[in-house]
Image (tube, rainbow, N blue to C red; front, side):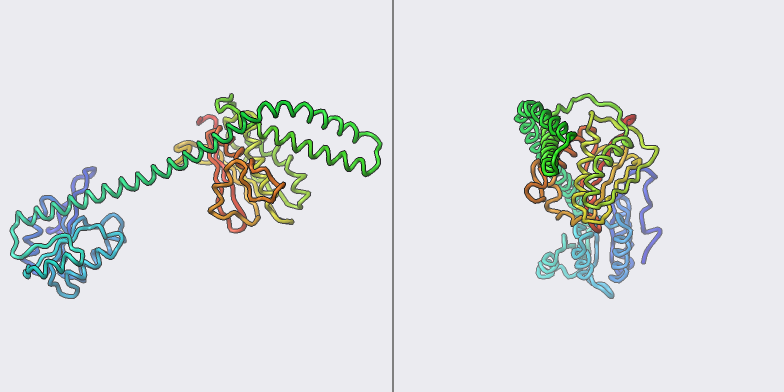
Amino acid sequence: MIRGDERARADDEGAPRRPRVLVVEDDESVRRAIVRLLSEEYDVASESSGLDAFEHLDAAVRAGGAEPDVVLTDVMLPGRDGFAILERVKGDPRLRGVPVLMLTARASLDDLVDGLGRGADDYIGKPFNGAELRARVAAAYRARTLQRELAQRTLALEAALAELAEAQQRATERAKLAAIGTMVAGLAHELNNPLGIVLAQADRALRTELPPRARDALASILRQAGRCVSLTRSLLSLSRDEGSAMAPASVQVAVECVVEAARPQAEEGRVEIVVRAADDLPRVLACEGDLETAIGNLLRNAVQASPTGAQVQLSAQRSPARGAGVGAGTAGVEIVVRDRGPGIPAALRERLFEPFFTTKEPGKGTGLGLSLARCAVERCGGSLALEPADDGLLARMWLPAAEAS
């Protein structure tokens, strides 16, 4: 192996790194000549055998980001020949794009065709001309650079397409919600008055002496009328203008209100609600009722999905500044609701946020809960996602702190 004086010195700290070339040649004089020819422009590492070259490549891959930009190898080598090195490079997904230039004293047409057929990027005959060698290496490095740029642009394009698809899906959801909201707004206002009368009369009648069957019937009327009112309010909230006034709101207070409202449903299903909320949670900016809408829908879904005797966990804690995505660089509050239900297949998880899409049995849900929750969270500048858990489903909500907003 040749180290030290044959490896070009690194540039000054902060300067862009120079291209790396790995030279594999068993003839010491030829190896030194190649290193001298290339060291002015490249960081050159050299090995004298195929086995040493394998170790060099393995170490570079393990280090991550230390792979050579060009490999220049003799065909005839002790241990492993140049074709073995070629197969090693082209057979590794992390090295596959590295150009391999083959050096040989047998530069016949058959040898050339054989080498290129195995994946070699170029073939250089011995004895070689120094200027030609530098030009071939430079051309190989340019091809490697263009390949990297193309790969980066492909990744950026794929990310942009994924972001566009998500944005289109969100826009479709919002358009659907807005259309529904506009359509039902007038009807909902008209329904509120008679529903209010039904509720008031049923409640007044329950305060009188009635036979048991009549009381049961009135109680059922009261429950179903209340459900109609709740659904009407949900539909009205779909038409809410995103520019509605926002004000600092307490997450602790919202959690307490939501848990209190969900307790009857939990007790009926014999499900335990466990709350872990930090005492030092910052306030968040939210439209009136948005916090209760978002947390409440998540909690009700979790209670309904959990089997008898199960536990639903609701936690709220400070969240450090995010590094990427929604709220990047902003501190806030993370709220997690976890159930112990059957879970949701990955293919359906994102569809649950579509208006009126539900996996529940007919009559058990409207399919609006998660749509309303996400709308409320996004109005606050936050994010909401569903994640698989070992047993059940986990809803993770993030909201930016009011002072950060």
